Amino acid sequence: MIYKIDITMQAKNDLRGIYEYIAFTLLAPENATGQLGRLEEGIMSLNRMPMRFRVYEIEPWKSRGIHIMPVDNFVVLYTFDEEIGIVTINRVMYGGRNIDEQLNMNTDSR
Image (cartoon, rainbow, N blue to C red; front, side, top):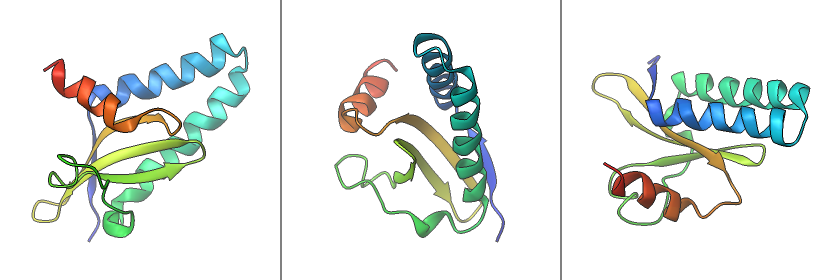
């Protein structure tokens, strides 16, 4: 099965923030472009076998079926619905951050 990829607004903002940080704060626009390309390539690869990456092990995210895919020093957090064939990209963040804290912040702001 080939899955459709749906990127949430939060994940789009995450990608934009990663690009801007690398390009403008670290003053490395070429690196920012390359990193964004690798993240997008990883995300688009989830259209086949999204179950190949592990479930994030901390609750309540585990029960919600959040999967975690590493891409370089970053992680892509996503869910997928086998019945309708959609992978939803929920967040993209630096892997060195406290992922659970970042997910909780996102939930608290809703």
